[in-house]
Length: 265
Ligand SMILES: O=C(O)CCC(=O)CC(=O)O
Image 1 (cartoon, rainbow, N blue to C red):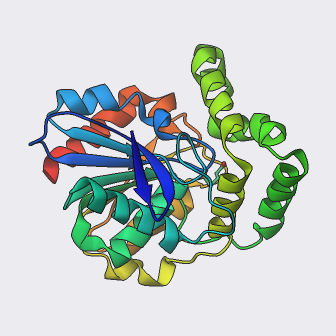
Image 2 (cartoon, rainbow, N blue to C red):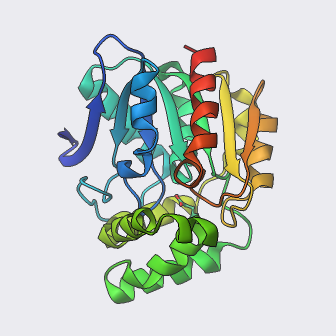
């Protein structure tokens, strides 16, 4: 389904009973709401309603040209909630979804009942400018993400997972390649220019931070720091997982998620 937000269409998917508390998911850079498919049936079974939003230029959402900021991307989430008539949600975001989550926690905290931030960062890591410039150049030159897809998959999944579930990682690789260059470049610019570290202590919403123990791009120490700086923040690590622990080890991730949501229901 599509929502018109300021003239561009945002794709969303909402399932579950009208009266149930809503869990709102946002995804990582160059993925889409499909990265949460291992979580949806579990949440429906636990009595929640599930909303998945595709970021601009990702999945089924229209690309918008130019550089984005975390505030702009958080604004898309708030406008989508407004358009759907939703007051508050339990928020779960991974990677850039977790960065958008920090923007929401700081500037729109009244819309969140709880937050789960996964495999994310509190700010642009020092020294990462060149890495992001290289990825952006590769995407611009190829006018697409095909040339960065294999490197991305290797940061996202362990070799053991790739052996165990080739159909799933290939599906996610195809989603990476299907991401629009504008969506990737706009979001990459947002990742290159944000810093929430100094304001994390102002957050008042219950927050859990989760990270794969082998995540190379958004590593455990950066995630633990976010939990330490948020008053009452909690931290959990998923063993033997890289950047997408919800896909790599749903049998560990899902009980952590459901237990967290039940505590804050
Ligand atoms: O995946 C994201 O949303 C941004 C952070 C990132 O690039 C991590 C990675 O791909 O290793």
